Amino acid sequence: MNTERTGSRPRDGGRPKLRTTSAELVGRACALVQSAPDGRAPSLADLARLVRVSPFQLHRAFRATLEISPRQYAEALRAGRLKALLRNNQPIASALYEAGYGSSSRLYERADAELGMTPGAYRRGGQGMHIHYTVVRSALGHLLVAATERGVCSIKLGDAARELEDDLRREYPKAVIERDLGRLSPAVTALLEFVAGQRPPAELPLDVQGTAFQRRVWTYLQRIPMGKTRSYGEIARAIGKPGAARAVAGACASNHAALVIPCHRVVQGDGALGGYHWGPARKERLLAIEQALSAETSTVGATGRKRKRA
Image (cartoon, rainbow, N blue to C red; front, side, top):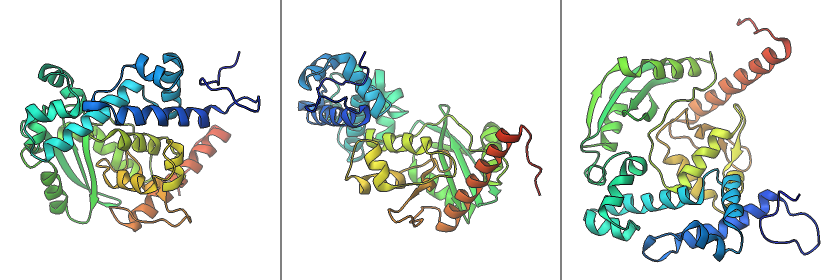
């Protein structure tokens, strides 16, 4: 049984490659979702009909290419539109309809999942949110970790604790922000051990907001093997957006969860380290830490015994 076919038969009679065919199919479907009138995306059945495949084939292609479903893509795109409108101070009532929500009740049903807060709170700079944070010294300078009840919302590195705190408050100018190490202790400990080269990056629950494209980039970054790198162009091609290298760079710059979403693994096309929000020296050090941890993990796997640290 041919499990790779996505609905189009190759003219040369050979079997199509899933990644290439899926990327093309998903690209056409995404364009239809993006251009839907009033921001209201077609149903899965209608979308599949428009690109001439079955709903099952389309769903499978999305999962293989973007690791999300067509519905999740449409919801993320809609949430991104809404956030942009609210940031421009558009009234909530008109913003929700322009973004593609059919009713105010539908918007508030989805607000927690799509925005992490109510639309009004987002528009008001995080008003109504409660964020706990702490700043500690680490092997890479000061480390700020902040979280909502849903998960970590910000991880920053820098030379001065006050600058990191001010940056957090600029992101959420009207949120209730309190310093509290107790609730964040497990996450902080895991991150400190990572930057000290004592353990691989931790998988922490996140509460970060981004457009559908940004989330695709961030998800891909987390799948790059520890200590390895990819160029902006390679990432753009891998997520089905060849030619979007600059947009990938923009998504990396919009990452608020350093270390957990590892934008330090992205380099220039010629292999040069390139820029990093927290400084090229930290980027170089993070890659060296990951490469050492990866080598150690390989040694443990090969010998069944952990190497003794010098």
